[in-house]
Length: 339
Image (cartoon, rainbow, N blue to C red):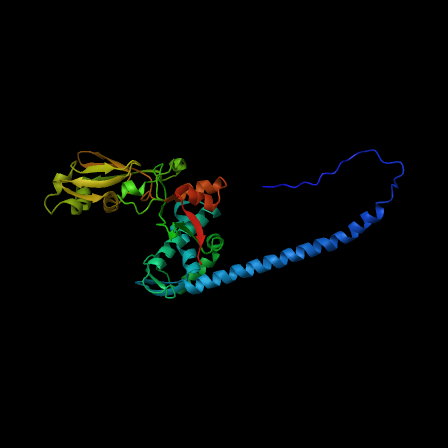
């Protein structure tokens, strides 16, 4: 960066032949013309801001017209713009009322980018032209039209979507797998190791030390022997063989401490399938087998890949912007805008 300075020598000594009142007219002229100069300057700035806002609105209108979403569920169908969908979806995946967390704007913006990235990936994979709306099976959107009016009050969510309008996360020119989850066990997972796949090189393991402060960082799930049989048996054995499961299930972990495989006598399932079947908050757990019950000691909430929502919010509290937050969780990615 080149910095140019105007340097003027200053002295308290005045030449004897200098007229002390010679500069008075120039000073008076400057004082009288200053308001005019300022008004002209700010007038141009206002015009430029107006042009910028108009261009941004046109871009938003173009995106909304080109990328439409149709939600389909047992409640019917609802057609909406990408922006409308993202505002509603954002409030659902980061709801303040459920966990008491007051989410920061920059954390919400990071999440909005991931949700838009997910949509961009679906649009890219869609066989039909992107001029056609994207149909999503969203049973979670079980609302009626009159219930949607309440969303207008969610200004923070709306602001997060609008201020990141059109921006998504890309790796080598394509939308990434925009993974996110509520709370890690202290670090995120490496997809190549945990999923045995090279398709997600940007999902690597990163430290999330702040997550240990989350209220739901640690939890316990206690199951009776009968309850464990009922939930786990369909994963491994035929009816009538449930009792052999007790203390016989083996767990295999990745380097981040999450179960990647649960196995019993040659039958197995992945850690996510097992934890969902048993209602565990995450696949980062250890089991203590008792005589009549098993206690699962669990760390974190969610699958552990990509961005920790709790960690992202803590980073935002510390002053990080949404782009820096995303770069902390995703390796060698870039933010691009829909064209």
